[in-house]
Length: 283
Image 1 (cartoon, rainbow, N blue to C red):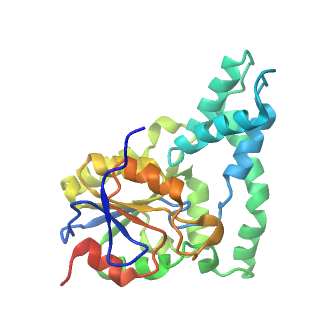
Image 2: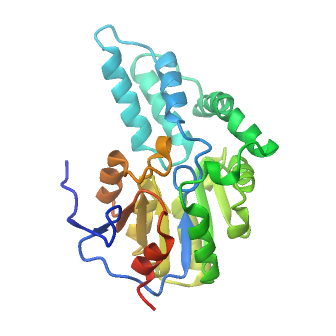
């Protein structure tokens, strides 16, 4: 396992900076991941995917349930941030290597989404009915931070591994679609036609800018790694999804995201003005 890059504390206990970090006043475009980075509507999704995989995977006599769970969870979390279909492709491979005849990955994806809809139905219904407020299902401090980014005149983009119709539905329910002005992208059944890398390349190409002008926030490795690779500034939102607002960093996310190039690690957006000062510098 590669050692984590050196880091240093930021100006607040909950902020961690990569060694050598410097502010970038030239950041103009901002990309956000959705689930776990802004939205908590789908919090707990691994608790749907993992039992489904455990149920459908052919078992080997010598394999303990604990070992099987760990293997499948590693597969799931390693691909977190990519389109859901990639987790299903990997699962189909697991079925095949055990001598089973897998369903098409798209079948597994639709079955998973059916089960996930059952889990989150009360959240969706509560937002529609007004029983829940939108901020009840946003990562702590997200709205004030989005407001400040918009006030600076920055262009905001949303890109998610969740299917695009669901991203639009939930962004509207959370009343954050307004910040992105139509620049909302999600997974497609024809998965070759979407990736977060494609969104990043499109931002840079259409705006004729180098990567140093891009800022990205995410809790999955894909958006962090892709942003790092083009020279952008990547913020790991290592959110404690099950205890929103706790201020605690999810250590698994932290290690994973620092390992693929995160410049900053935060648990949430609890101090938006301080975070902006860190990112853009004073002035």
